[in-house]
Image 1 (tube, helix red, strand yellow):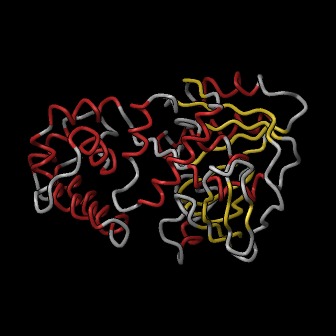
Image 2 (image 1 turned 90 degrees about the horizontal axis):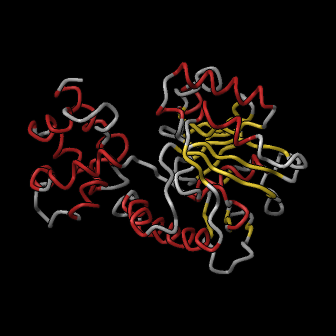
Length: 318
């Protein structure tokens, strides 16, 4: 990747992802795109470490936000010795529990009780969908725990909102670099990944972390091709096995995606994939997103069933 290509990537992030959502990150991305010194530092990093979200979160984690009016790129460069190790050791493990609101209608279509495995689970906050509350506008599903977050999700009229929370008898997660909800350092990293203006989302994340800390879900370290089968073998035989993931397959090669799809099929598990439309082209097409740019496509066993908000903001049943 050239300096020009990386600058264009940051400008595209400012225009397509941050504009209208986060003025802070829009200005940061524009600042980074214009600073050749910072771009060169990023290009010296290993592949996959140049993402805007990772740079912004690592800088905030290391030295906080720059003062009003101070250039972000200069702020990051001034603290590069502290920022660089965080970029190298961390990744954008956006463990957004609000995504459970999009997964819930799909889980409800599967015969209970359920045994669930999440690939790319981070701290496992999406492994406890039965412990949160949900507000779909035309229907609400309150959590048993009054302190649990209530996730808002705009559901289309066709979306089959379940009458109750699912019965999950077993759960486990898999991640290359698991986070621990009992670790203050890991929790702080999760919070830093929330964009600056998203205060309500941060509040709900705080509540979800508190719920998870009372009974942390099991998340083990491992590669999705090497460990999924062994983990699936530990699921109880009396429950229907569901393997799911969100925004994970974009981090692996197309060949690995196909091998993983074959693996899940061979295991006889139900497969819920919540990914960008371009990630599984045999499942979804970009045409599905003409009026929902930036949406994910939720699929069940290789068939697209819904368009979803990347952070659980909406679910449009297909």
